[in-house]
Amino acid sequence: TEAPSGDPAAEWPVKVQLFHCPKLVPVAMLTIPKCGTTSTINWALHMEGQSDMDWLTFGGELFLEHRGLSMFVDKFLTPQLQKAAMSGAIPVSRIEEGEGFTKLLVYRAIHRYRPGWEKFDELEDLSREFVPPAHLCPMCCLQGVGRQIVVVGRNPFVRIMSYFRYNWLYSETWGEQHPWTHWSGFRPWLNHVLGMREAYPGGFANDLKWVPQSKRICKQKGVGTLDETGVHGFYCSLHAEAFSSDDVFHLRPLGDMVRDRRFVAGPQVLESGLHVLHLETLEDDIGRLEFLLCRRFSFCQGLP
Image (tube, rainbow, N blue to C red; front, top):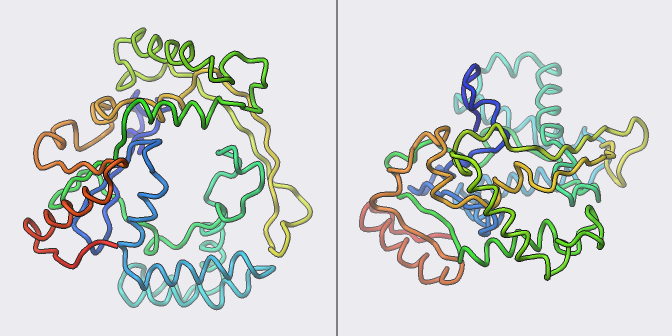
């Protein structure tokens, strides 16, 4: 999320987490970076209902397996627009606009994601290019009112080590000559991170305008498409910072995340009724969550 325009916080380069709030299950899940975030979001997506999942799978297969967009538009996008209009999610008049509106939706569905933002996009991972129509996107909320607040976390030391392995260990970006790209560099790197947090009054929670940003600039190739698709590839260049907004986002503790004044629910949302899913005891914690949902919300059908 971003702060309102004109608010100095709008210029802070560190992103703020939202709750993931599935339509059919009364939970509001807050993910902590490097704590199984992708798996947790996929799990939340399964809570959106089998029909949505089936359509997402179908749309993704059409988009990835067929050259050009006609099959994707005719068999996936148009039926979904009609379904959205029938449910009142979009005005029927937009459907009647015909090809112009469909083209806008195609652009949104395929090109909204910023390619090259993550390092594996350098391999042109096409699956990251597909964003479905809004009514099929996983639902988020600001405060999780009327839902069971759930935080997914793990051992803090293991979380920090996971990020070090992800961003520094044997990194091609920095090269093997950099002292932080080997396990012997873990302690000095961690001391540097802790020193940066201590050096500023707002820590990693507020007044974050000081945080530098690594810059990845990507351009779409003008000619040629990725194999078996009608989509152009991208090429990217990177100007990396040794400590950047990506580090703050991935490493700041939960306390800093919820004290960030852009986090609307505030730290008080964690003061009562919170349920934590630990990656180390996930099966037991999910069982207790199912018990809570049944007792507090009469949702007794279990979780996927």
